[in-house]
Length: 230
Image 1 (cartoon, rainbow, N blue to C red):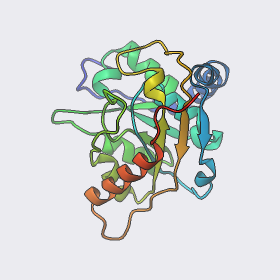
Image 2 (cartoon, rainbow, N blue to C red; image 1 turned 180 degrees about the vertical axis):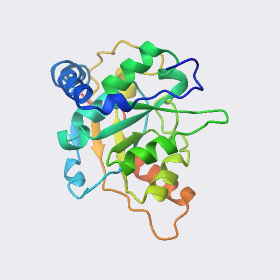
Image 3 (cartoon, rainbow, N blue to C red; image 1 turned 120 degrees about the vertical axis):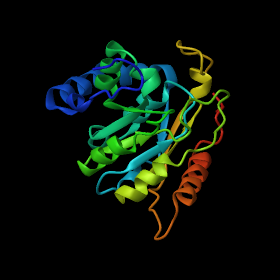
Image 4 (cartoon, rainbow, N blue to C red; image 1 turned 60 degrees about the vertical axis):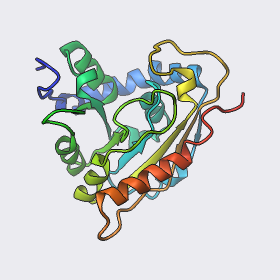
C-alpha cells in the first residue's frame, strides 16, 4: 500500500513466479525490442560476468530513463531474471499505479533518497541473502548534463555488509538519446554502448569510502565517450 513517498511499498509479489513470467514476456516482446530500436546499443564485456557464482551489486552511471531497460536487456537472461532494481521511492513509488507498474516491469524495490528513512540497504540486503542480485545507481539521480556525478556510499556499504562483489556498468550515449527532462527519444544517430566491467571484490579492511571510490573510478572508465560517432 502507498500513502506517501515515505511509506513502505511491498514489492515481494513482483518476484513471484506469475509476475516473473509476465515480466519476461513483456521484456522479450515489447520493452527490449523497443529499446534496441531507439538506442541501437552495442553490448561489451559480458564475458566479465562469467566469473559470477552468486548474487552481486551492479553499479552504473545514470543519465537517462533508458539506463535500466538497456542494462536488463544487455544482461544474460540467467542474470537478468534474478536481478532487482533499486528505484527512487519519491519518484516511482508515490502512487499505487506507478509503484505497481515499476515493480512489475523492472522488478524494482523502493530506495529512499532523503529524510530519516534515507537508503534502501535493508531491503537490498534481504534480496542478496535470498540469492537476488541488485542494480543500484550510486549517484542517486539522473545526471543533469550527462557527466558522472559523485557516488554515495550506500552501494559500497551493501557490498561490504553482504560480502558480495560489485559489478561496474558504464552506459555511453544514453543521455543523448533521452536526456533528463525528455520522455521521447531523440533520433540523432547517437550510438549507445552498455559496458560491463570485471567484478570488484571488496578488500580485507577496505572502508565503504574506499570501495565507493574504486566503484566510481571503474564506472567512469567504462562510461567514457558518451557521444559516440554514428
